[in-house]
Figure 1 (cartoon, rainbow, N blue to C red):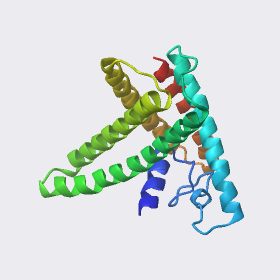
Figure 2 (cartoon, rainbow, N blue to C red; figure 1 turned 120 degrees about the vertical axis):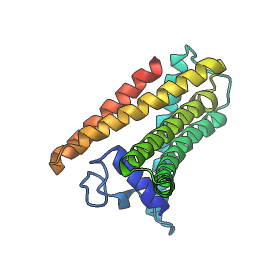
Figure 3 (cartoon, one colour; figure 1 turned 180 degrees about the vertical axis):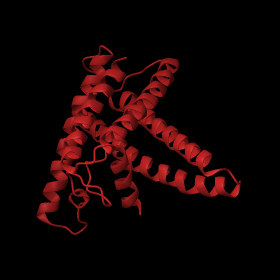
Figure 4 (cartoon, rainbow, N blue to C red; figure 1 turned 30 degrees about the vertical axis):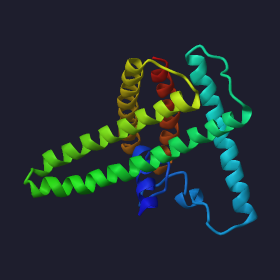
Length: 212
């Protein structure tokens, strides 16, 4: 169920990327699951995943520091590697938490609102707003972890709260708009290309939001 919730969250955020529950995509979810049984292939896959993830986080960490005009911070190489791993884990846990909490919000919220006798239209709108706020809060929390604990940047608390709040709302809004665009494409082949284009555009826009 946890795995289904995570894949559903990814599929709803970026339709056309995962081949999930009747919707065609460019990636089979089974390819993302690492077998629990030990094998040389599995070990190599884990090493490559961690190496690639820490490399991406290293570039992101340097970009965040450059954004604040900081070239380097006094820290050992081992601690820098641990911070890169921390950033990867924060993003991975954020994706999982978004899937779980939005699913819980949908199930529990629907039950509560139904018990209170709230109309289905109003209930659906309330659930969508709740899911939006959950996603925005988690996006903002991830940015805070990246800035404070991965890049080791100290930002005034007022500016930090304002920045992560704006980033969370705007990033979720951009993702929602991208979902609507990709979801409107009925052709499976075009949907896959649209998903890739939307993902690249989403990353570009998020980078610009962070700079603001």
